[in-house]
Length: 164
Image (cartoon, rainbow, N blue to C red; front, top):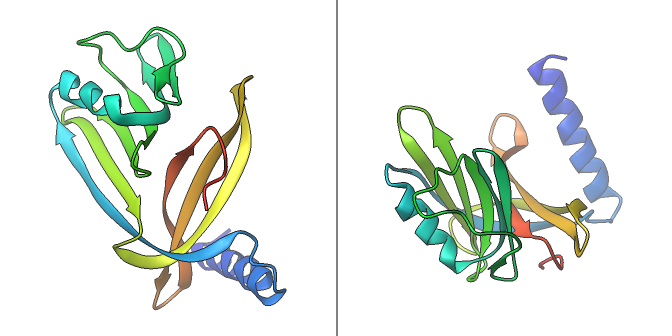
């Protein structure tokens, strides 16, 4: 499928949802993205997780999960080297962490309420956690003058209730 065909399909699907009077979970919002900021100290990256409510962190050999402000298993070891993770912070913002070979840890912070205007849609999928069955994700679309609304970002919103 060409890019043009793909864009047309995306836009037709979005237009159908909006035309039918069902907002399909879409709402207008503003989002501010800070980053990625590169960190070379794993301890500085891990220290930011102290104010995380929910999230997951892939480490060499295991994945650790944080729910309601506490680690379900043993927390990441001091000096551990995270590979990737996503967190909903206590203030409602989101933090994404990714190891980038040769550059360090890319840390991206997203907060809704100010910043760039666009549309958002919340998706809930089945989590692998028995006591926390929801994995909540929000995708963001922004208006491109040449192509209409296009996806441009997303963030982890927690393992629990669907935020408004």
